[in-house]
Length: 506
Image (cartoon, one colour):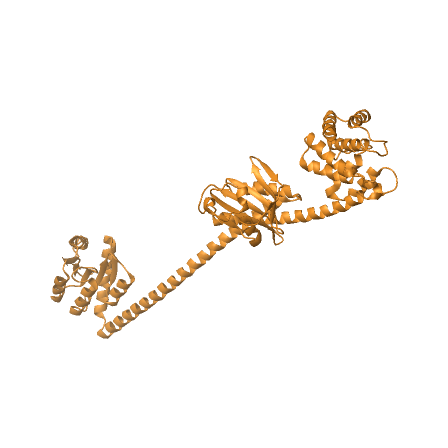
């Protein structure tokens, strides 16, 4: 390739010197440089340059304007554009002006020399072509540049639209994932609570289980569950936690005003942010410490509020977050349903029990004298004296009230007949076992010996201390002596009978 003259234009002298050193190493090209674009135009106007390498950003004149004016002075002048701030628009404009190449800083010596070789080769080819061909090529270059500009604009718009769509899809996906996680968490809690409550049909058991789960899932200083009735509005029982135990208070309290009555009527949670300044607490003041914040959650079953869960925290302000309240609502729903089923069953069982008790106490059975009532009072006293749990004392009360129901059938062994009558009723199954054994004819492995002896001792004592088939009534001490001789009661039962006899005599 013949020798060529190159002009370097850059406002940074160091860049000019560096390029000049690179391009003059083998002596093939002659190189001049200047840091002033106006000076460069003067040099181009004097002729003799084959190629100009110019920076696009210079304070006196930008490189595109310099290239435009230089090509006006010398149309066949080759141009290479260099810059440290490359962009699509500047590259397209440089191509439109006929620049042979476009380099971005920092560049390597090999890249610069290769660009110079290409530019000089292209210039030689262009010089051999006709003027008409030059114009055609220029028009083709401008058309290609216009097409590139249009295509780049279309691509930029499409990229912006796709980015926006991607952002929307990503946001929707995140929301769906959060909702799914929330639904899964709700389902897990409901399954866990359902498993814990499965098979529980006693209200006190359901409330106790729910209260322990509530304390675990929604920490606080105090936790309670109040059982409610709507007409008239009242609290029928209050369950609280004392250490590791659940304490059930069965006393009734009317709800004439206040927070619990509002929750009962509206079936909506209530939050008191500062108990010390609240004027809507009403009767709930009787059961809580009036400091901190309070959350009351309705336990709804079959569309009615069966109970409310009460949680107090020592902090004032909004101490209960929306998310944790939402997480606890499935627990409230499951407990409300379980309470609805249990209360419905209890009402049905109580109705059945009252009907059976009327049959057992009918005049035809000879019970108009109050034997069953006295027997019930006695088994309660004896059971508590020897420390039986309240739920087992309830079984003794059922057995005492119905112990002679088998007498409606003609013939002996009314205990066995009463057992046959009552055992299909699951809630009376233990009472039926006690009725079967209350005369000591048979023993049952399904109820404790202590319970069997309590019922038998109370039955024998009442019959001996009242006129009846066993003869005229005996004094309490005589009846106790008779029981000791006739039956092998354990010492606890005999001691409890003696205390009961003393109290009865008084």
